[in-house]
Length: 325
Image 1 (tube, one colour):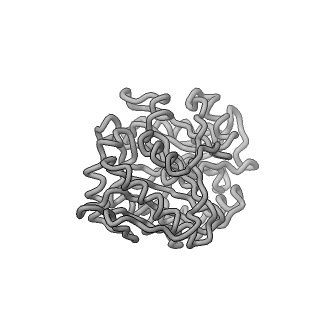
Image 2 (cartoon, rainbow, N blue to C red):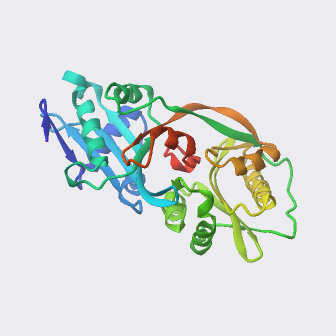
Image 3 (cartoon, rainbow, N blue to C red):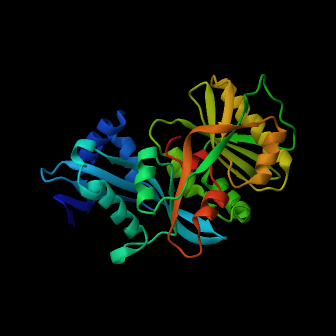
């Protein structure tokens, strides 16, 4: 497909070299090829990448997303997290917004199922101001939702866990699958957080930056956390809880805080949108709400069963649903 001298096409093997160069130029950040492959070639449900090239064959724009298994109203519904959207300004100029606008519109049409493309129920992401404005012009993007972090100081000293629970550390596929099957009714609108999700999102990501922590009681894993440490504030990036006993989640809070402190962090923070019950437990354990300083949530719905306000208000969201953490 061509548009004003620019050609639009899906990613093909070998394009990653041009993508990596453009990514480094636009975002002023170097990313390893292993990280790119993990992000786009290894997700359980794959990814979507649409590229725009100028007449010289140089990459001008990219619109991309990671396809995820999600549930909506308890029913399976594919969704996609929009990531790594960029345009190189000196190559992306043109009428009506130029190739960036065309790339965005074509990408979203394919997400809706145009020309036989596999549709998704909705897409979500965390656009910067420029991309938010571009989407708003076409009527695709609505006003994004503000996000809130829950934050508290990490444990001041070593905690003693009661005999009722046992704390495990490390990825456990069997435990993750069993916990999701037992807990999924608590998450009617969410990314499916089964073993495939935890394995790809955290265990296989290059760099080994995450620790997975479980609380077990009476032979079952009751709550599961993923902690990303390495700075003064440790990010609690994911959480699944069966909801049976607040004490199990309180034990997980203690375990997460202790491990954050052991890794040099003075505080722990997380997103916990769409689970008021768990948020209440964390608030009772000393967490406080603080505004998310940078990111906001945006969404576009394609399935008639879904509306944008529902996604912005009801979709279970943790930091693990964003590629920023």
